[in-house]
Amino acid sequence: MIRTLAVTHKGEVLTGLPLQSIRVENYAWIWADFVMPTPEETLLLDNYFHFHHLAIEDCMHLLQLPKLDYYQDVQFFVLHALNAETLDAEEVDLFLNKNFLVSYHHQEKSEMDEAWEQVQSEIHSRKGWSGGPMAAAYRIMDKLVDKYFPSLYGIEDELADLESRGSSESVEELMSQVFDVRGRLLKLRRTIVPMRDLMYRIVNSQHVQSNGEERIYFGDIYDHLLKLTDMIEADREMTADLRDSYISLNSNRMNSIMKTLTVITTVFMPLTLIAGIYGMNFRVMPELDWKYGYFVILLLMLVLGGGMFRWFRRSGWFK
Image (tube, rainbow, N blue to C red; front, side):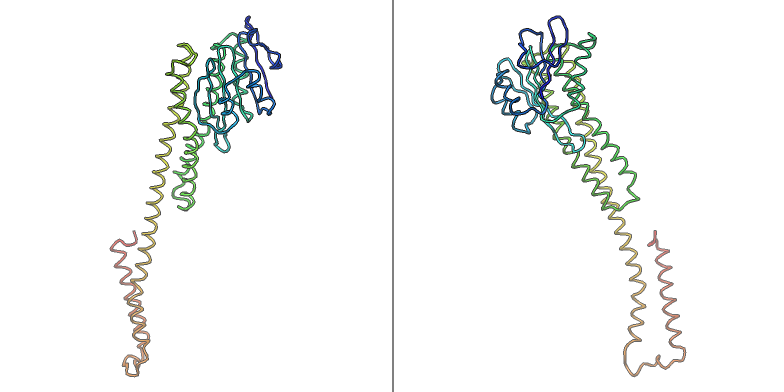
């Protein structure tokens, strides 16, 4: 599907025009949005817009890293949207010229719909920032970056919950969840850091067709990406701290178990020795002829075991 937005020289907005019927020079600027395009629609990138074949190849072969390329009077952007469910990156490509903006993406994106509606609304109301194709490109980038925050906030809430459940669940389950969170943070990092580097290049490049005011807005997106990367690094450090805490907790639990088993074994060692001695089958064992020998040995074992237990307890072995 291809949807079009054409802005006349009088500031009127026309939508839904067939792309082939639009002559760019007759309008102030146009925006053509390729949404899940068919192969026939993709051919228009070459047949209608005459974009460079390398840029078209980048659109066809997913997934490219975020980047900015220059082809004569056209700037080509590769951006990454974020799938909120899988945290996988999804490519959004932009072709930018002073007269048009072409967006190309293989998935339907709510961010693109929001940017589309916002651009129309601002042009109709004559409010907000209006600057042609570059303004629309800013809106797209801003919406894409804004969608990064909810996923990262969700991970931070999960980490806070993991920290509070440290004493109520098994260490194995907690460690599994921590490594799962670290894996998702790594996915986010692979998306956000390249976008941060791209935005830094946009803000500082002299080739990008933007004025000073527009650079301020792109700088705001760059600040958001810096905040996101700082949050990711802080969360990764927190997962490392949680991992170390769980390992220490597990070690303490194992030490406690080993201490308990050691006490039990130590108490039963002399009792086992006594039982072993009197369990031997020698004929000459005077104690076997004692009338009350059985009860005496049981009492001795009871006193010896109880005395050792009390001594271990006074020594702090059960704390």
